[in-house]
Image (cartoon, rainbow, N blue to C red; front, side, top):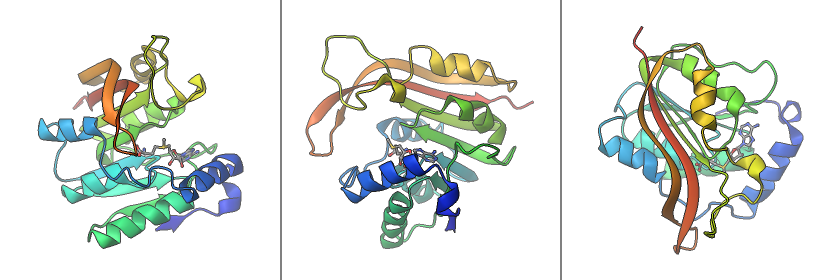
Length: 216
Ligand SMILES: C[S@@+](CC[C@H](N)C(=O)[O-])C[C@H]1O[C@@H](n2cnc3c(N)ncnc32)[C@H](O)[C@@H]1O
């Protein structure tokens, strides 16, 4: 595991998330993103090559990708989340390259033309979208799922503040602003039903997008 000097990371993000994870956030959520699972079942996600899980949390999606044969780099600002993910990986005999790092830190870059798959799930960071596209190999797959701003009458789960949600059309617009060509394989904005940590079903408003970087 690679760990950045904790003092050089954004202290508010790191401390806030460490506290949440220490208090048990997502501790029951062992299942990977339903979207990622569906894309894998549909044959969109390759079973080899390198993968990047951006803001991986406790690593539910990293572990899923690793279990299907990908060599996963899993990055998160919270050392507590990374440690919990690493313990789960050890228990499951899975290998993941855990990296504790502030991905929003100025000057932070990603290796180019490297990953067959990149995922950023439930972490809103528009600045990273062009970098993620450049980090894919030609033909590589980017999977995004964010909480969506919602003004419908339905009760929805997830962040109370729109700061941690994307507006309708944001993902598509931000991706098109990058200079990298891609094809949209799947796109959805709206309500989904999903299990909460206590096992009950709740509604979430999400923006999902899966794209393939152009081959040229
Ligand atoms: C809602 S959780 C999602 C975790 C994971 N992607 C999942 O789907 O289970 C958001 C994650 O973003 C991480 N995060 C927040 N700010 C970050 C930053 N500046 N750099 C890296 N990770 C960050 C948090 O530690 C947290 O694990």
